[in-house]
Image (cartoon, rainbow, N blue to C red; front, side):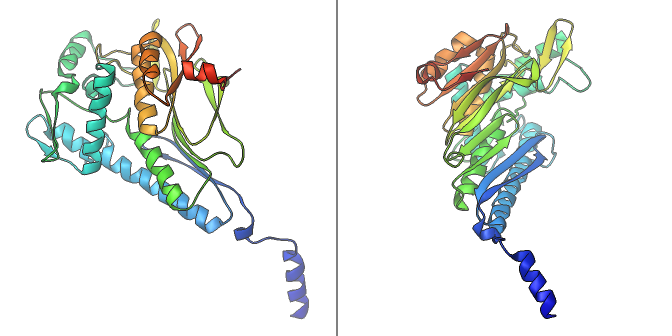
Length: 330
């Protein structure tokens, strides 16, 4: 027994307990129909895993509340019933709906969650698009001014038959914001939460910035710019995420609410902002508006910057990035 004890001591010699060995911990999962990545720096494995568990549980909770594909979600209830009666919703969802209307006003309708009236007619896996007649009916139902909110009753009602909403341009940004808040409550100082093209950084990467690559929209393994970032959110919307090519036209999941069709003037938009809700909403907004009008809106918003790849593959930077010299072209 004494020999066995000595051998055990030798095997453990030089090892440091988990609580004294700071390192990066990470986990990946598919939630909300997208890739979720959580990464953090910790000197305690158990604490790190507990924090990651809490973030992923929050992602599942948001998915259950806001998924348009789950029949028992509050969002699905709204889409089924709000054209017939006011639907009472939780404070969290009501707040998001109100924020969506603020972005709709800012963008003069380029951001509009009622785009789903047309958006749900596309099936990117089966390469199905609506007919002109179907699209005409759907477009008549689109319009954020017919999304009627009652702040006192906490209800939402549709002002037109056939309306639908989708928080696909919003929910992931909200989720990464909540995820980073959870990490902070767990005492994490350096970390990142990502959901598809939306990420939020907590602090820096232990003494140096996080480096986020802007993907080349036409070459998946290449990047066109590198962004050094700390304590901000970044969202990328691209025409390469869910799409099919119909002749010379690319049908992708980013829909212009004004036409019910995919915009064609840009290939990708990356927006940097203080929070994920803002960066995600603005990446969709700039994509729909195009380079000139989109960058004009970005220029009016303090702390917001953007990188746009236009339809010819040319890069455009907002004034804040150009003056700071922070992006690195590849």
